[in-house]
Length: 458
Ligand code: SAM
Ligand code: SF4
Image (cartoon, rainbow, N blue to C red; front, side):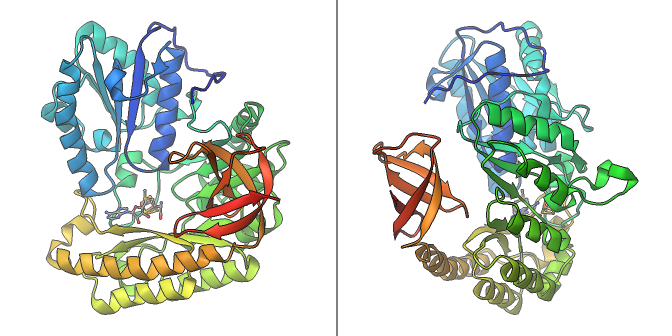
């Protein structure tokens, strides 16, 4: 569905590409999806309109990911295919940005010289400028190591008119030994509360009802701002201020880090009526020795204590997590510890990953302890089978209950069905009759499938 969105931006772009069409291919996480929304916003400020696919686009932006090895492999395969895309019409422009561009720097340019613009993660707001330069002077690469402006000033064109991402913090100060994020996204920088609140109010004035706060470790939000001269987190206070925004209906956040999860945050989730009862606590491994090698800052017992604390304060909470299978040196006993936590915590869903060595990380150098692929595959299947049963059972608990559903989009598979989320985050389908996009309605859950719920109006 084509959106008309009012763009309020401090970015100074004079529209010069009226009639041109753009398309963005996004790989990776919510941060990348949100960056792509901003790139769309800047392209539209420049006069372009979104194409339905890359086939009828003049400008193609590939927003890359590098969190796992197969993301890198995919990128270079994709860039090979896109050489053909460029040659199929005159004056097509190919732009590559995101984490892989930031990490690989000149490599993208050397491996794919047909790319017109290579841009890193820290200078997205310069995209139109670089596109202009490439038209005047030929291919350009701009990767900067230090962030100058928070890219949050850029306008956004969102996929949904009613649910929006809101970045509260960029980068990460942790040093998990498997993770490439700190080196491609830089150190942790919190946005000022007033800027976040203003952006939230702006989103609400455009019709947004649900906001998801984004950061790599939202629990430590604000520590670097030294508000009232104190170097302490300001996340609970930020939730309180957002909760007071008139006409904002729902607030979600991702990701908190288990080591910094405080009781006060869980009470904020409980007590603030707009904060959804859904918490993502990334476990990574259930084995204390692997957690220590991962440099996560908690052990199995501490993690279980956090789960108990969350469930005792919020008995109906929806809990989700991330797990990496096959970290270097992971034994059968270590993996059994992970399975133990999975069975105990009964997560609503788990994002599962096979360990992928990322050059430049500490874990990449643990090559003597790499776990053989067949063992990783078997463990992954075991985890998947167990968790699928748990997830299905957990979804069934909603059948027969009344919930509030935000109608977000038309189902891709059936245009007579709307799809949205209930408060605790579960995807829910409902017939279109008597409803419209953006409605927040009371529904009864009438059935569950392995992946979503079915509802009817109450
Ligand atoms: N900041 C979040 C946290 O601390 O949990 C994680 C963000 S990261 C973008 C998303 C997930 O990717 C991680 O939680 C982890 O499970 C997974 N991941 C990161 N690096 C990985 C690697 N080298 N191999 C496999 N999975 C990885
Ligand atoms: Fe990566 Fe750890 Fe930072 Fe998450 S907290 S982004 S896993 S370094």
